[in-house]
Length: 143
Length: 347
Image (cartoon, rainbow over the protein chains, first blue to last red):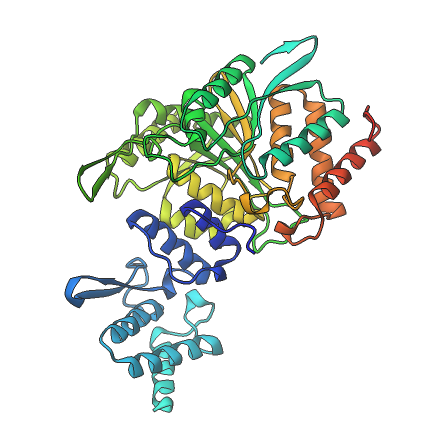
């Protein structure tokens, strides 16, 4: 029995900090979602790796990364594409293209797990294009 | 503050859940340490719809000036017109500043270490104004109230506290990019007050980014000031970071009154009466109260004993991974107080 089962948003944020594995799917109004999604992004490594999607009526949807525009590193082949790539994976699932989604996600996770070609924000010193090429290679191998 | 014959009278509200048993332990420790405080116990029954209980409690606190309380359950089944009892207490007594000091404890296993954050939360308005209406069926409007007066007041409290405690930086937490008028006003007031404290660095951070920063790099924060709801969220995140709701004391200060309780105001219904609740938060809150009453020697003695049990003896209750019972922890604390040679009554 959980000693501290949360019963409202502030308690949930505390529960999230102490034991995030107790949570599965959370649904909430706008402001709480804003706060909790950033909090959870912080728990898993930050906005550089967090995907998101905005779903509307009739299946209209926009998928996006929620990190900043990073003007200081734009155009220098340094950025971490993970957030946007995983948002793309969410998009593929939304479109029913589950096989493709699964392959790309697995390749991306494996690249990160191997730690050989990580971008700077993840602790490596590889270029964005090198990181991407590694993922593409793995996708090819999975085919 | 009421002092007769060198003894202080303090209002005690046991509350619900684990409040009553933990406050009994506080009284035990006080009696054992010969603390010159008498408690006037006032019960508040959360199931009743009438306000008599609360009015009695508020009158008692007005009389004594100081209170120590457990959390009073807010029953969601009561009509919307019945305000949360804890909320009524805060607004009636104008306890405008909720203060929480979040510090890493060496004896407690946590992911992040070296946390030392003071959170100052505006305690009377904002999203807790209880002003809601349903003008069209199925469409509810809630009013969030931000006033210049209360924002200046809380900012002033934060900067003054920072200066008194030798802290270097105050961070205002807000969402003024969206709530341009409400949080915008709050932020503006903080900036105005900041200009009167050039020795203290002032910055601001949007609330969602704040929670992200708190869970990844909490050591960057010093003193934080914010409106009511964000204060509630940030307090809970910080309590989680240092080991949970059983550890952190909280204080509510107004111009004339002060009420002490646990920082995260949990009733702990599921663990009540089982001798497993963590007495630390309420004991530390009672020490904050003793400091407020200028009984600093007693405050220090009890606080040190609590922290020694936590960090050196490492006798922990279940919520922080230990197997000690509430009673075992309290007895350990009393033994340490006794061993320091101060006057104590029978064990």
